Length: 426
Image 1 (spheres, helix red, strand yellow):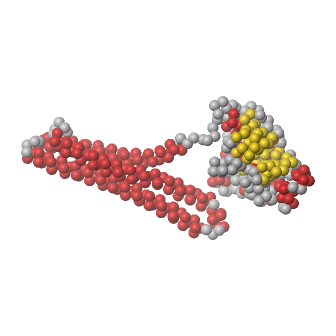
Image 2 (tube, rainbow, N blue to C red):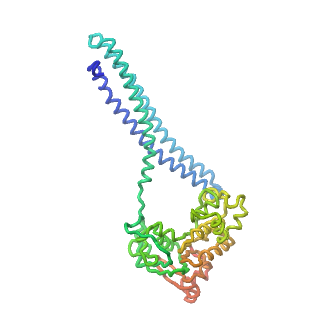
Image 3 (tube, rainbow, N blue to C red):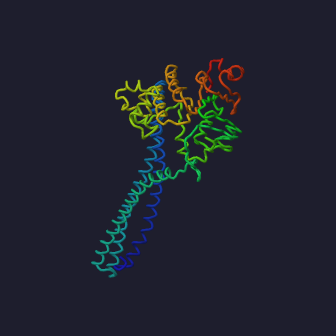
């Protein structure tokens, strides 16, 4: 272009900065809208998921209209953001196409004047227009690529953000694997508080649980029961003090090794979308079908599994929606049987069950806890009276400890709770 006519080329490139500036402004608007759109899609999906997973609650309160209105509100937000994006994209397209026409008009007008003044020949002018057409075609392709790239970058930024997220709990440099675990657990002067709290949940807390012992922890909500259980597998790190398993600080043990030796059962059982077999095998992915069957039998789950349409191959649905609470809990127990850990934590494992289901599950839990160091948190005091020792917690500290008989003889806080119905206000 410069070789053909310098003056015409200067005119051409004088218009390019304005085109680049305008296109960049629209791209920035599109990028902002794409980022907001990504967040809103997450909120919209979350709203739908909540409504579907809680459909029984929605129906029981006759709140279908409320959920519909909630969805419509989120959807309108999404549409508004989408509208901003499409307007910016339309402006972006119009600007780039308009600049094509404007450039042709300027080049032909200036070229015509240059031809009249004999500064450029007709042949050179034709060649120049062809080169400009080639240049603008290349620019358009770059613009289209930029638009596609912008969409891709919005997704990749979120992906990178997730992949780059660092876990707060990591292995120390000298972390070791655990050998054969006996199950001795010791809390030594442990202080702990959550980031959002100003007060310690645990303060100068000391506790020793001997290998194979069955310890129960009871107390009202907020007393620190679940916190104790969460600190053993290092879901959180202590603020000060130490927690030891078989004499070694848990911070000196590789996380995978530590957690492989701990089985956890909670009130809210999570089953993955898949078959009964796949959910039980989650406790030990390398287990054979025979080992899975044996685990189901030991958990008292085999009887109901055999009555399912496809037995172990029965699809349980999202979060196990096709099974009852008792059935899900027994599959969870089978999962822990298959894992076969030396340390067992039962955190309100039966609190959501009816009396009949609880009795069945409780029998399975008794079998599961044999020969293992077991920590049980319960809201029904009748379920812990056979424990080797019961810790009674109140106001974030131990107020009483002993066997069921010892605590009843003391006629203290535990005695009052037990005689008033044996239920804790959780």
